[in-house]
Length: 116
Length: 108
Image: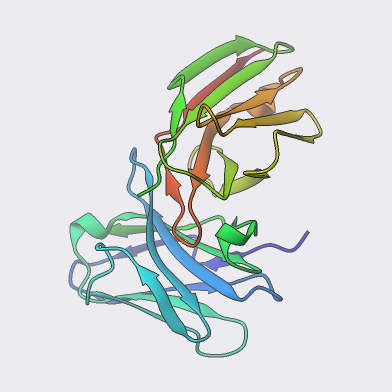
């Protein structure tokens, strides 16, 4: 079964450094997402991306964050000037169509980011 | 925004028994999705049920939806140790909103 793949699985970074998390969505999918889960807390929506632009973002997704689809297969999340509170599991997800059209959203295994 | 709340927060049963988890929500929905998360791992999609559907099956999983009561249930029959995980219902379109989940423990 096709799956969303994410790299790295775990990254440790110094506070203030920039981090890029990478994702390869399922190949025929058109909608891409980033979510995060701070340890012990709920999974939170960050951003959705369609047709090469952000379609929706949460208040968490401020100027520190950016997303990009640099080529036909990758989807990246960049976190600038990381803070301790950015430590979390970051999930990439994708769907063929919009979720409210009954399209399943598939998640990757996550990238665990630790900021020290 | 839409949010489902799972109940119970934790459930511990013996292997072979059935496990039932519930999800309640407050707004109207187009569909509802159930996910499983093993500790420290990714979210695995289980079932999507549309608002015009009342029941869906997938293997040992059975999901029901009662839009009049704004609730859904996930039944796992003949549970196995490998079913030990957290289970979430998720509502929304692009922006899925997750609850705290039900932590299911299957005891051998």
